[in-house]
Image 1 (cartoon, helix red, strand yellow):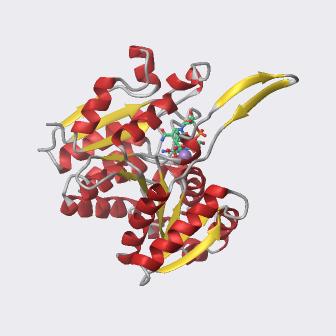
Image 2 (image 1 turned 60 degrees about the vertical axis):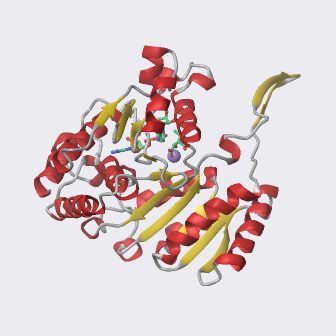
Length: 349
Ligand code: NAD
Ligand code: IPM
Ligand code: MN
């Protein structure tokens, strides 16, 4: 049985996952690791961004670690065959509805953010993003010709059970943290936002009245994140707002290249682990991408899917020590290559 399936993907994806493999082989030599092409790389080889075989293997593995997908090479490919469509199909196929995106500020990096140290120091936010619903998956969805041009339609759909299950994940996490949940939507303009607020409020009253709940419109949340980010503990939000707010939150920590994620489904099912960044076409092939988001995604896999919290702790501490000693890729203002950053972590293990 495969313990860890690596899907390196495109652009910097293979560069950062190569460092995950080195770390995994050192830290957990007994892990059975497998690898498959994914995204544009799979499209070029197999005519599809996600083969049936790769999806079946993903579902039969304990954990899947994805690098990144996409790039300008595939801009002309039909939408359902694009690298990003493969990622959505993987998330939906694995039924990983809860995407945990932690944004925390490592002390040695408190001056690496474009925000002031006193704003970001000690930051520890957990964004819980609904991952397999909302406007990413709603139908109808199409582009059609109309007189005078075209008409494009996307549809946002959420149901009570979908909102409730992601709400539960957020409240449960909050209980183990600082006991506060901020739920973000646009209930002032969207029906799906209204339902979101209603379901989260009911769930809170019914089962989680001990947790502090706050509702915040998503636009205000985007502003509050840069004004006073430490007011947040757990943020729960939909697929699209979660995507945007997590990229924003990453910059509070110093770099997009630092933020990992875990996508989880029902207990016992495999998790999907991904850095939240993309394939970074502007730096792909240069060997300078920050591998820490991918390495920290493996750390989350050790914790949430591979049942090795001890190794997760060791890895997390090693990353912290490497940063303390000044290890920095160019996105953090340093000079290390991707491989050298991987080595800096290995040296601390
Ligand atoms: P991006 O996340 O790829 O890059 C945004 C910026 O952040 C770029 O300047 C890039 O150089 C920098 N960056 C990202 N990761 C970095 C890292 N590890 N180290 C240093 N710098 C890093 O977003 P984009 O440019 O908008 O998208 C590029 C492609 O990636 C698109 O095709 C998009 O669809 C895809 N994408 C994929 C994923 C994913 O696979 N999970 C996520 C986001 C975007
Ligand atoms: C992410 C990415 C993906 C998303 C894209 C590539 C489908 O931006 O993982 O954050 O929007 O979910
Ligand atoms: Mn994103």
